[in-house]
Amino acid sequence: MKHVILGNGPAGVIAAETLRKRAPKDQIVMIGSEDVPPYSRMAIPYLLMGNIDESGTYLRKDAGHFEKLNIDQILGKATAIDIQAKKIELDGKSISFDKLLIATGSVPVQPPIPGIDLPGVHPCWTLEDARAIAQLAKPGSKVLQMGAGFIGCIILEALASRKVELTVVEMGDRMVPRMMTEVAGGMIKKWVQEKGVQVYTDTKVEAITKSGSGLAVKLSNGKSIEVDLVISATGVRPNIAYLKNSGLDLNTGILVNDLMQTSHPDIYAAGDVTESIDFSTGKRIVNAIQPNAAEQARIAAISMTGGDAHSLGALQINVLDTLGLISSSFGLWSGAKDGDHVELVDSVNYKYLRLEFLGDVLVGATCVGTTEHIGVLRGLIQGKITLGDWKDTLIGDPTKSMDAYLAVGQAQSVWMN
Image (cartoon, rainbow, N blue to C red; front, side, top):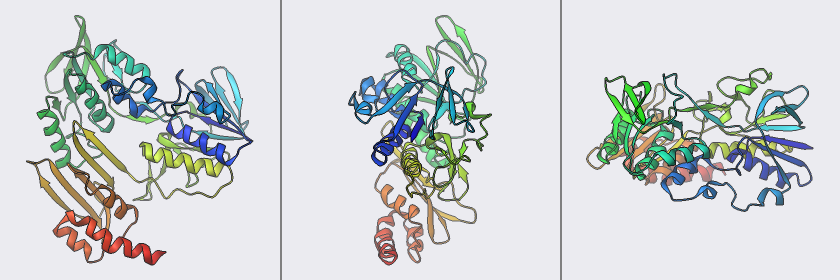
């Protein structure tokens, strides 16, 4: 049996290792599109901070790791997949497969802004991007970052550590608008500004032009800013352009079932490239977070080798450290239809807690300034625990989630077992 894994990020690597454990004699081929060992994109900010070198981004530190596992590695970029012939078109050559896992992740969204292709404008997505940014983001350099979403806030922290003069522009009405409520996102904005970063929300970059040795950035709020570097962190999308004519069922991402199987029985997908079922709603979602990618990769590899593993659905989990302020959100953090909520706000001390309920079940939560409740809230949401009278207790004091979990969650676990 020949297993081919298209993509060598976290999902691809975990799938390859799981396949090898389950199928010691099968052929495994892992294809990557960058001429570097498999690495974590989420480690790039730590590289820019100087906390690690490039080898610190590598997913496996032993240089011979994949050779020891007899996992073949190929460098190339897929241009098409023939699902009938079971072949991948790869830089002018074809590679056949018996089972295929597509784990090509995400690609940065490039906004349609005049000047976006000028030198000095970079995404922060690859090691090559990181090298270019490191050359320009020197202490005292003027840097403008487009985007203050989850990835943007991680990059923000890396840039701030390099002691640049940083301006962040976000078109949403708050920072991390796809992860935080209005109050929480506004709290993060205030925190960041107090740390010396200028933030403009409800603002777009309208144009980028050359200006002397640098760049001039025109904003929708009427301001024009002279900078040395522009970072584009306006989001990502599933990397599926090469699959357009493949015949696989696609939407925003590759549609998969709970086995991580696509519309072709011998083709699977895992990670950011998938559009899977949301744990909380039962609807399809692109959930581009690394824990989700790792779990999907494990399930896909088990399924590809005839095992019985099913996804319970992609749970939205976001945990972020923005210049020392921890924030997190889980499940239906923005609320459920016909649901209710409780909100606790301490703006002075940068603490915030909001719980979302549907009936007497906790379905979502948002936290800022504390990690105390994170594990318990995730457990209550993921366990779909019936709170009963404890819901009223949490409405009165949302900090009592641990008490609720110990009283109700453990009791239900015992009853279910």
